[in-house]
Image 1 (cartoon, rainbow, N blue to C red):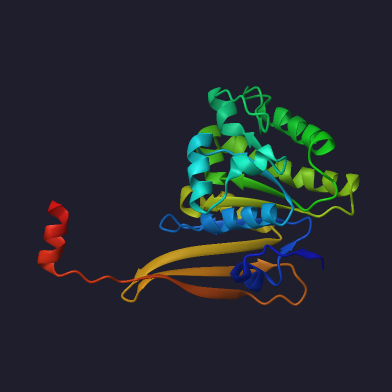
Image 2 (cartoon, one colour):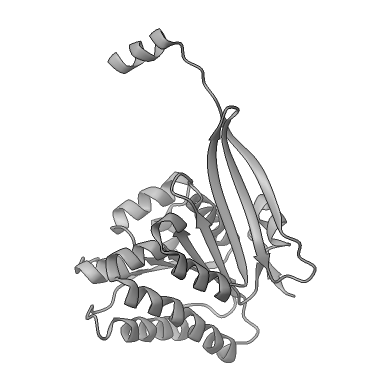
Length: 256
């Protein structure tokens, strides 16, 4: 099976070599985790290596989204101005926030026609903007944001749009290389939505963060990957050590 290496070694190892070409990969993390950083790292590597990114923004104003991208060292505006990244801003569409940037796309927001407008925009972008000769990564950030701002009805339809779009993309250009990554905080969604998404995904990355007596520990696990010969894997990463403070040191630090 053809896979696309992400360039993030700890992720490629547990996935079985990379993301399946044409596949849907779900990146899940808990509320205490900064697991979304992994998704942005994958987008960053894709752009650095000459790929093309489509970022679907659903959770935050774009200014706040850019702060999160910059945290990982991704200058989204630079890549967008170079024609390597486009942004579909559904958050701005919902709240009627205007942008003068040519790389930011919005739709007219009406509850009854939103999904049709979204599909129409995706189709036009694929035909006229998204290159056919590059690796293309489509990143949804984030699914819980879509459910929170747009409601479960539209949230469900966004997932269905990716399923329908999958077959259309393959029909139009069967030799192209692309993937879809859905990022979500699993503590922000009901079990039903998570279960459905898991069944639709070719690969699942789960990231959890725990505070132990040794320090902050992050676990990257892949319970599902339809790569030939795949065996479920997990990696344990130590994020930081515990810093012990005496009682008086602690009280003094609060007063500063």
